Amino acid sequence: MEIPPLNHPVVIRTADGREHSSRSEGVEDGALVLATPFGLTADPEAWLGTEVVACWTAASGLCELTVTIAGSGLSGPVRVWHTRPSTPSTRTRHYNRRAHVRVPVQGLVTVEHDGSSHRGTMLDASEAGLRCKLERSKIPDEAEVTASFVVGDRPFELPGMVYRILEKDRGAELAIALDADPRDADELRRAVFAEQIKQRQRQRLE
Image (tube, rainbow, N blue to C red; front, side, top):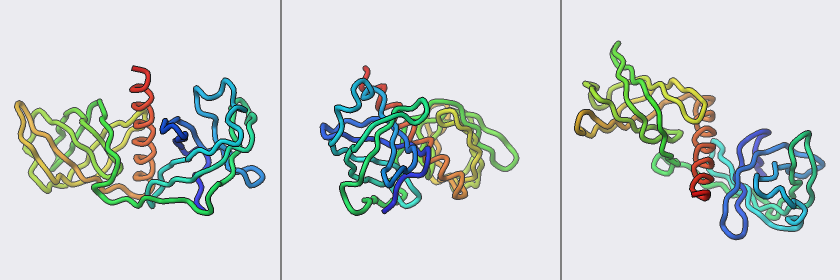
């Protein structure tokens, strides 16, 4: 059975379909320890015996594990839930290129090609690629590039290839397939996942 690594971002989905930000605090006495989601900490013991779904990303895909909240407590300053798996295995939705989660991202991007740097703005990003708009660009289709950008507070500088160009007023929209090594791909996956959680939380507050 697969479980999230220590300090890995986790989304807790409750029976009403709502999703709450959490993270893995490790394993203790056979229990998966999860940070109690913000907003559910006022009376954490009210959730004892409740089934929730823990969701997280891994190299293989989006993992889901149904767990029962068996206890609550403190791990240092962090209030946590001690959970027990309610199902014998972790469900994994395997990735494919089109299935990667894309999130809108605001910020600047620099695309380097053939010794020249082109500045523009981000549109969205996933662990497999990004879309951006460049004001002036002579970068051809299928060009090999290096993209420098930020997701959340994490900077990235990754190689890739332009696979689509859409001419726009005063510029062009580029879609870039990223060719990151496993470590960078995992960091980008976590950053995108965390950004998605933040955006969902902001939408619920609006």
